[in-house]
Every structure is written in structure tokens, then in C-alpha cells.
Length: 492
Ligand SMILES: Cc1cc2nc3c(=O)[nH]c(=O)nc-3n(C[C@H](O)[C@H](O)[C@H](O)COP(=O)(O)OP(=O)(O)OC[C@H]3O[C@@H](n4cnc5c(N)ncnc54)[C@H](O)[C@@H]3O)c2cc1C
Image (cartoon, rainbow, N blue to C red):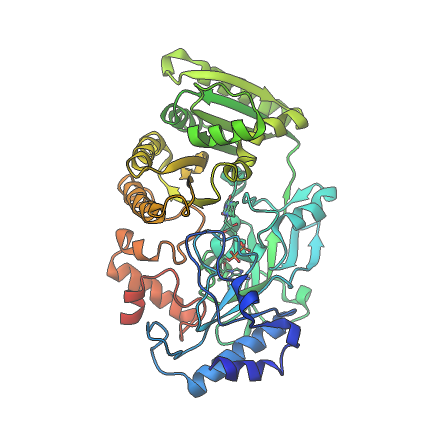
């Protein structure tokens, strides 16, 4: 079937838009998860929405002529049905953009134009292969920005953000991706071009009417089709910023401080938490001079009107220093100076690079609990890591209750480490659900967590979700083997 598809593709794409050599396919065999790898059958590099649509139509045509019924999920070596996977920058952390030998990767990376910036209405229309930070760089001179700021924002695409409903450091105040998406142009799993939400058709030179389904599409992890253009909201760049760095003797005490600050009604733009393992890594990589007794750090950022943030900062300072609350604060610094703010943020933003000095691999896990349960969760995660002899280093979007335990590892030196990471991750997932959390804070389910879905959802829940999915994708060929446990897909 792949050879038949390649023949058909010759009418749609130029030879340099079709990658099928081993060396090229290996570049697309994983995302940023590090634990999962699988080569796709083909990688395609379309330049336009029309090319994406024609590719998807060609896949449908081959499936209709030569495919076999209901066999997309079969584990045999034969290819019974082709599926496709949209891919942005491949920075995903749940294996969502990883294929197999029956799937074709459709890279959206070349669809990266800014089509229109409307300063009056504070919106932009972009192709979804645009890198997240490229949009804010373009709108900065007008005092506007695209608010979702995943830590990968200099690499990841807006299409990937939409598919994963990405969050970020400053999303607690300004909202995650779904709050910023107004409309979408998509290529459906049947190869039609459709418009969802309030995307103004005239701006795109088309005259089709729209349905308000853009929110439903956001977070569907590529299983509802491929987003090719998006109308996004732009927000004002805040007038002033203030960064607080507060150092504690334990992540449990830092965690208590987070929920206390929010309980009092403050709305910082970010509260990030860095645990002992991550502090050790950045401290030695950048000589930050942090004392050994500092076991957790909070970075609290306030933005908005200058007077208001100075007022809020003074109250937060008072709360953190209040001895009756027993936060055991070791050190407190605050600044509005840009260079000093950057220095305080180094302890968070430099973590991934610093991890590389400790181990060649790092596995970032996405766990989430209600904010008030952070102390309990952090203590239990430390215990789990210790029991499985894993090097733990956590960086958390603490205001959202979104914990990111990282395991730093070297499988060449420690052959059983990957098995132990899987065991520890499963325990962490169960723990988070027991504490009232959910399966993912922002990285999605993908293949990483598909078998965990029954921890949280009943068979009826899963069947309902599959029914919604089948409205968009009746043949289940758009990122077909993701999100749902494979057993349930087969039965369904
Ligand atoms: C160092 C690091 C830090 C990170 N920090 C954050 C963070 O703070 N917050 C956060 O939320 N995430 C974070 N991530 C995860 C990741 O960057 C995001 O999930 C991002 O949105 C993925 O975008 P991408 O373009 O790389 O997508 P990919 O990895 O290419 O794809 C991810 C999923 O989206 C689907 N997809 C991609 N493009 C489209 C499209 N156009 N239409 C339909 N489906 C599509 C794919 O099929 C796949 O299922 C981080 C990752 C790294 C490596």
C-alpha cells in the first residue's frame, strides 16, 4: 500500500517533499519523550493546505481501494490500512507525533506564514507550522503577544500547541492555548478543507461558513484532522513585571506557600517550583551560589499595573515571612530589573541544559494534582524516586498544580533504569489520580498514557469519547493509535 501511495503522491508533491530513506525516517522516529521510538513509513513535507488535503485524499483513496475493514489496530506485520499523523516540531512529550510502518507523517513545518495581524481587533491569522515565539516577536513592536508560552516556545509550532492544548509558565494568569484560539482551518481525515470557530473566511479568501468547533478540536492531539491555519487572540504585553525568588527547606513547604498565595486571592502570572534535584543541577552548571540547605525554590512573577504589582509583592513578602505559617523561608529576593530578573529565572530556564551535565537522557513526566495537594504529592514522588533508585529533578508549573518530575538517566550505565522509570511513572500517575488530579496537565495522552485512560475513565466514558472522535474521523485514520487503549479501539 505504501508503494501505491508513493506513486499517487508523485502527482501531488515534488520528489524533495517525499522522504522515504532510512536515514531520513530515523529523524522522525521519536519526539521529545526519549522513551518511545518507531519509524514511520513515509514523511511528507507539504507547502500548502491544498497539498495537505490532496495527500489525505490520496491516503483515503488507497485505503478504500486496497484496505481491509477494521484492521487499523491489528498487530500483524501486514499493512491493512494507512493512517496519517500531523507533525509540528516534534517537541511533544507524550509520543503523539510518533508513527509506525503503516503511518505517514505529514509535516506541517513548511506552513509557517503569518497571514494577517489585526491590531485593532487584536487577532492574528497564521499557518499552524509557525513557531510559537515567532508570532510574539512579530507583534512585540505593537505591544501585543501570543500568550501561551510553553518552555519549548522557540521550537514548538502553534499547530502542536493547538493539538496538545499547550500551557506554559505564564498561563496561570493569561490562559492556555484553548483560550486563545478563535478559529481554525482544518483538513479533515477525509481530505476536505473545513473551517471551525470564528475564523473569518474572507481573510483567507474563501467563502465557507463556520461551525463553532474550534475549542473541541483544541486538545484533540491530531485525532480530529490537521489544523492548517488558526485565528488566534493577541493580548497586551503587560506594563510592568516583578520577579520574586523564594527559597525553602523542602518542596512540601514551598508547595504550602503556593496554595496560600493563591488562597489569598493573588493572581501571579507564574508560580514555578524547582525541587532539590533540579537546584543541584543548575547550581553546579551555572555556579549560582545557592546554599545546600535550599531544597526548593519558588519563582513568583507578577505582571500588570506597576503600582498594583508593587502592592501585591509587599503582601506576598509578608505572607512568606510570617513565622506563624512555618514556611521555613531561607532566602527571599525580588526585582524589577530585567537583567536581575533573567538571573533569578536562570534557576528555572537553565534546567534542561543543566540536566545534560548529569546524564545523557532525561524523561519529563506530566503529573497534575489540585494545588492544595502539592506538598503531599511532592513528598510522595520523592519517596517513589528514592525507592526505584532514580535521579529526580522536578520543575513544576505550581500555580496550576502541574508537577513535572524529571528522571535523569543513562541506560548504558544502568540497563534496568528504563523499566524502573516506567514503574515509577505508573505509581506517580496512580498517586495523582488518588489525590484528585488528572492524567495530563499539558503534554497530552499520546502513546505515553493511553493505557492509563481506564484509571480515570469508565468503559462508557471511553466509548462516548470515541463516538465524538468518530464524528470527525469515521475511519479512525488520523493519528489512529493514540489516546485510547488499543484494546478499546479494537473492540469499538
Ligand atoms: C524542553 C521542553 C519544554 C516543554 N515545555 C512545555 C510547556 O511548558 N507546556 C506545554 O504545554 N508543553 C511543553 N512541552 C511539550 C511540547 O513542546 C508541546 O506539547 C508543544 O505544543 C508541541 O508542539 P510541536 O509543534 O512540537 O508538536 P509535535 O510534537 O510535532 O506534535 C504533538 C502532537 O500534536 C499533533 N499535531 C502537531 N501539529 C498538528 C496540526 N497542525 N494539526 C493537528 N495535529 C497536530 C501531533 O500529531 C502530535 O499528536 C515542552 C517540550 C519540551 C521538549
